[in-house]
Length: 598
Image 1 (tube, rainbow, N blue to C red):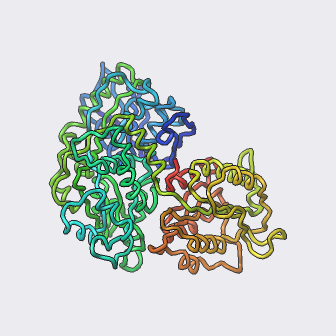
Image 2: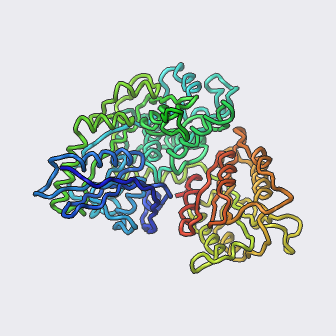
Image 3: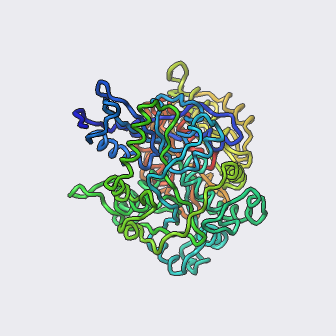
């Protein structure tokens, strides 16, 4: 059937507000602020709408294929035309929405395309009514989990033969690259997504437990395997090498690509040696799809240092990208859903998946995949999907074994924070967001709290003031201190405070923890005694030997987001745009997710 209206790709934001009271809130109770992409088409009169929710890493592709479907002929149902629209969302966030009855601002979907069937099992535990009973969920594409390293380092490991998960990610925890005969390369650290939210992070954690139990591809992981002391020690050793837990691996890769193309031909400084992610993302990165700029021809600029995908010896986890029809479908929508599924399995659409770096629904790679990922050989039989209760137990274990954090939180207490933001002041919103976000951390995490503005009568010697020393998280003490803070400083000494906070964390650096500074401000630097941004960037530049990342939250419209982004990027951290006050809580939650917060 033909279509006359044009389809628009509209970037937006979505965040789930409800927190589910459940024993595995580690999975269901977390939300990241991540861009969602909605393919919007006004429904022609009489057409039957089908709304599809897709995992974010493939949402643009599914949107493209939906546009092709909508323009194709012969797709009528009972004489009525059909219109498929697509929204992209993090799989963990979508699961949370479905489990809670979908109270978000976006329309309820009829089809869900998560990155892995793992989320289906977790959703069944939370809310069986959210899925159709006894329903099969066919695969539309697949992508195995890999360990990706910069090419030179990846080649060094490939020369040693096929290594296992622990040999790559865990064995170097004490000696770093000296384990592989290259002490000049220093420490070995890697990044993975927070498994409470991300499919790659969840699958990587499960794969770690499989390897720890001595099982290879085709085996099944059991609850008894998780109780063994050797398994606990193995997983703890691997988690000790985590640099930080990303809230969005695609965003991390984009920042990595930007660093690769910067600094007059030299790759940007980073302490990361490896990233655990889907094979398809290695393919996209190496083709230049993550590049921040394009060449004169408009083609993506390929990175100077590509990534190499390693398939661990024991096997890996295969992300199966299932097609899930939800109970919200009526009879005609179900017919459209079945037809759209058949359409996605047809050869032209499957070739589009392969061009995007995926393997097809039969798990067959394209001829180009190995060339672009620099992988040698095929992955072994994938690990079998554990029972949902095993996944729950794994996440509970990860809560205890994940790397702990050292965090200094600096809150702007200049008088501009007293400005109204809705029915409250900016400062009230900021302190409330801080309380809620820090409550997600564990009692073994260490937190310091500073306030800053410019000098006041109460603290005339410096524009910043330590309020709570760096110590084990005491939520009661932090809440009490936050309640007593007042926004009474005349200006914002942003640069001086960031420098001092960074120096303080370097001096108190703990190699067995994630070390970071979190800065929340509604303004820009207003301190004449220290107004040289270039000098600040030199002072906070990431030191791979003692990495202290700076995470900046730009709060309200007066924030200098550009400078905050430069500060964060230089230190290996990330800036969050919360200039819409409604985003402040989500922004702070996204920050603490980088520290393994659940």
